[in-house]
Length: 404
Image (cartoon, rainbow, N blue to C red; front, side):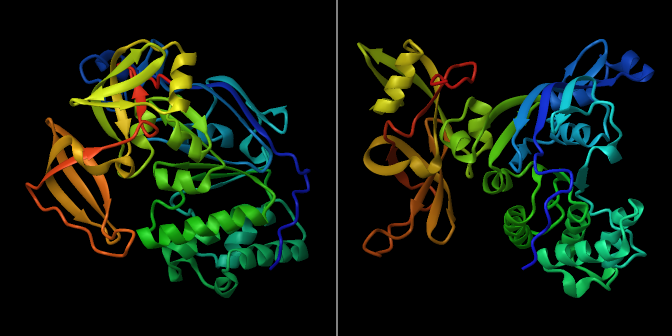
């Protein structure tokens, strides 16, 4: 399979965002009616100042050469705005953006050596796939034979060679998205920006295209910055993921780090499917030992968690305890609950139960280790569940992970 040639501008393509901010100034009407209406602020909880609405706050991130960074968060958290500031499509209100060590704040988008793939594909309907992919190179006055070589290499990498003579309307959504990616990579940019590129595809195609993007990044010599609201995409694609909420970074880490050690309640609830269970509980320090008490059950925390809490000198206090559904187990003793809904997922059942007025999700395998089918639980079934001390996440009442 053809490999894309390294970027002519050199192999280094690190990015550095230092204290980046985006403020959308109030229009005259907004200023007058801000207090009365306040709709956008309510929806997104973004900070509103005299200058305007702050969409991105103190965004600090260093991205290594050829690293794949994913910005993830709910709608309105500032992730697409951040990407558009890197692209030069949005003005930077504060802070500094460096690409390859060069300050880029006032550099025109076309001179930043970046390419962008949009959610909407943005293909020219009157052009063939070949013409769409060749277009950015034609604008740059690249010689014809070089254009042909690059377009055919990209088409082979993306498995769209057979569609080069077709118009976009004759292609499926997944094929169009490949063409849009092809048009971006023929330019051999230092940085490839992708703004929710898979959100218009159905679930099966999304999974397929995710795998294609993972393969693609092995074949091209580019740094990726990818925006999505889908945490599965973030977890499977990113070398590191940046979780955002209301314009602020909540946590930066590898997918495994943010899954195993969420910095706060928001990250804990956002990453992982089904969502983490949360309980009102008590952290109890007895001498040098820590345990949690929840619904009459006492669980001693693991050695690693004991060390982390001791290092932070955590005191006994009321906490929010987090436990992932896959880490909850049915037991003879433990916390009593009543099953509300039983969702059959094939190899496992997701039990939605009520424990002391709280909703709890428990993932139960349908087959035991001997291959025998386990008992199923219908509406109203009485169960008990428990969990061990190594899977507990301990958050203070402000939502901060006490191990951090």
